[in-house]
Amino acid sequence: MSVLLLTATVLEQTRLAEALTGVVSLSVHGRTWRHGVCAGRDVDLVETGLGAVNTAHAVTCCLEAQRPDMVMQVGVAGAYAGSGLRVGDLAVAAEEVYGDLGVVTPDGWRPAQEIGIPVAHVDGTALFNRYPADEALGRRAVDILRAAGTGRVERGPFVTVQACSGTAALGAERERRVPGALCESMEGAAAAHVCVLYGLPFVEVRGISNAVEDRDLSRWDLPLASRRAQEAALHLLKEL
Image (cartoon, rainbow, N blue to C red):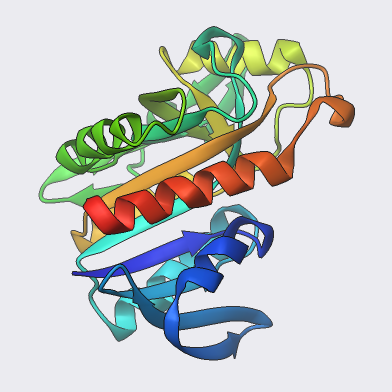
């Protein structure tokens, strides 16, 4: 099985890069892409850059050149208050939702359906804000990670935004938009969106780096969250 493995930043892939053997590296638009073998699988480890546009561009470039068996997004995320997740916990995406794509009305934010123009059409279905992760692979990923004793692992909706929630009030508002939402990041929905267009299974695992609250960097732990997410990804490359 071949895997396209995505991270937004270098921090989120240092351990993954070390685990690759037979590495061939290249620089693409100033970012490093690596091809190698991990757990007996051909892996393309791609640094996409922050945000939806960088992610969609990188994934599209890769998928136009080759067709992997699976796309896996790995990184960090901020946990919503209702999720119960703490710094260092793991989350697996059940679906990805664009959390700020839509229209702001006098009555507040409304999703892209309010505009009335589908964001994508797939197999005759109009898609707007929500894009699925592969259900079978996602459930299997949770089982693998829990069996490996990796700590708390939860599966549920993820939210993707282009301006991170830096206040508890905004985080609560976005959490209400997506019932059951676990966390937010800046890339996942773009990757899931492109994978739906190409008909490829998508899996996403993230380590929690912070609570979505009034922004306080002293309470964040990006290195821990990044390490936990990468360790999880290595387990999944071996077992999924």
